Length: 113
Length: 114
Image 1 (cartoon, rainbow over the protein chains, first blue to last red):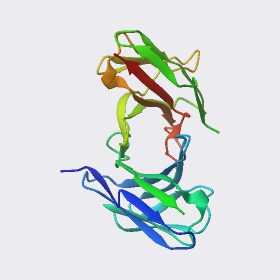
Image 2: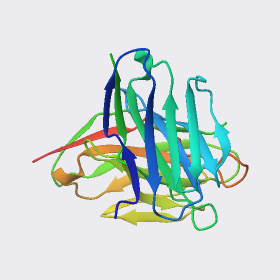
Image 3: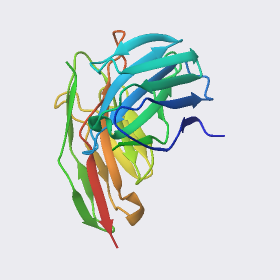
């Protein structure tokens, strides 16, 4: 009964490839997020969706495109992967009107070679 | 804009020692404040939170008090255990505006030795 799940857990790929990371939450939340954690553990917001609408889009390259097919899913597609994209990507979710605690997935460890 | 400053790590303590991890913030208005913990190889878990001035969040023996005067939310525990070894993140979230994302501090690595 995982609350926020991500797939895959590990992703090793070559520069220039296109890859996707999937996120699903079964908490009934209406808002989902993608965060990037770099090698120094620093966490930064990338995107946020509320009820399938984009509400936060920080300064990330347009090679990164989030897609939310429904309120329970927020996927992250990355085109033309670069070495600097290597990081841990965390999905999170929250319910805006029922408390603001964000619940995080286990992370996807992306390594670009 | 919002920002969170945490004491730099790593912090190494012996079991049963007293722990303090300092956290100060800059924000417009009165944000909600959080401590998250990340155990090795895992995602972030909420440890505790406080939503208004003078609130004290507590969980698993950890405590933090929302101090408006000093814009601080320091994390404390009276007696740490080896199992507390993890990275601790202080974070804030604005209560107003459309952008409600968490703004994190840089994280503090804690290692507790037996």
